[in-house]
Image: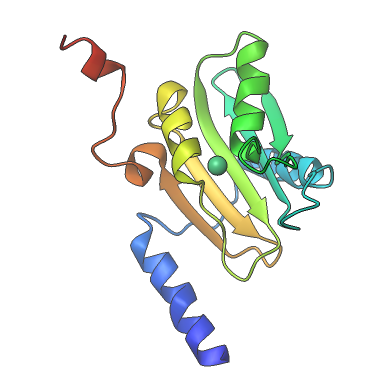
Length: 156
Ligand SMILES: [Zn+2]
């Protein structure tokens, strides 16, 4: 069991574009905000608490958590919750997203969140980590190759 987890962790690291050691203070603040938001995750059905935070070009941080619903399909992920908070405050440009979970391996954004992040932050860093500080970093574009975007609507 231990061996297979180790191999799985290695695969995640190899499949990411870059494995980083987080050192810059902006990203550390972003990660701290994501952990703080995770404390408020509303996940009575899955028990899978997620925290996320987005960093704007101007240096502001907005955070969010997953919010589940008895109808399941109306659940919103932490990544979108944080991004929508920022957009509601007039923010449109982002440089980084942090996603934190208490999992064996860092958790990347789901497909829906990748699409929403692409709308506002195609080149943003996506830093995913767990409590042990296993860190995997992507860009939004890395996570959604061949994406549908506003460019496609201009082709009509
Ligand atoms: Zn999601």
